[in-house]
Image 1 (cartoon, rainbow, N blue to C red):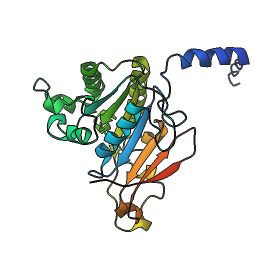
Image 2 (cartoon, rainbow, N blue to C red):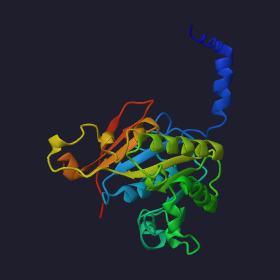
Image 3 (spheres, rainbow, N blue to C red):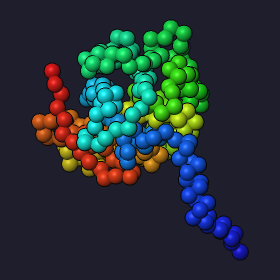
Amino acid sequence: MVPKPPDPLPDSSLTALRAKRAADYPPDPIPDIIPGGGISLIAGASGIGKTAFLSWWTTRFRDGLPIFGHPVNPVPEQVILAIDRSWVQSTSKWFEAAGFPEIRAYSPLDDPTFSPSRMRRKDRRLGVLVEFLDKLQPPPGAVVYIDPMAPFLGGQLNDYDACSTACMEIRELSRNLRITIIGTCHTAKLKADPKDRYQRVQDRILGSAALLGYTDTQMYLASPEETAHNYYEFTWNPHHARQATFPMARDP
């Protein structure tokens, strides 16, 4: 004998359930591309220019300008958690150059009250992330950038179980706070031979396939050395729209 499957929800109940759940999430920052209340990733090699890219991206949101031709929804605020470098000494310079010096940010490396040794406990890092967010108090509907996100992804990026669970916990946090999280990620070391690389750029993101399966939109910034072109390429891979790639250049 096998258990009887539950009766399907009637259409009216399903519609009501969807409406109730939709009220738990903020609007999509970019409709069909960046879902509100979710987790999206921006990946690229270390030093490729992800932070510089974010300084451009955030000004587009601030000014209500389309991003790669897609209209953006107004967001009440954008805030940044700068994890790997000092905001004061390093990261803030990109946003000053882009004309967005007023963006609010927090870096534990600038906080004399924070002990980095607390990060050694993998099972307590979600609590640390909550503390960091509490420093910034992002309002409902805000977009929060975590640069980089790896320290909060379970402590072992190649561990599918740990990584998937961490993504689920962060998604719950995002939903409860009604914020949208965009985290930066590094890629695995790339070999010189383009034929000896993953064909899909999202598969180059360092870590388990759980990073793809448990996040919403994966984005990838590739350098001219990777593309064999004289320009950068930015690719996004949403769940509810076609993957697309856009050429980019860096000004002086």
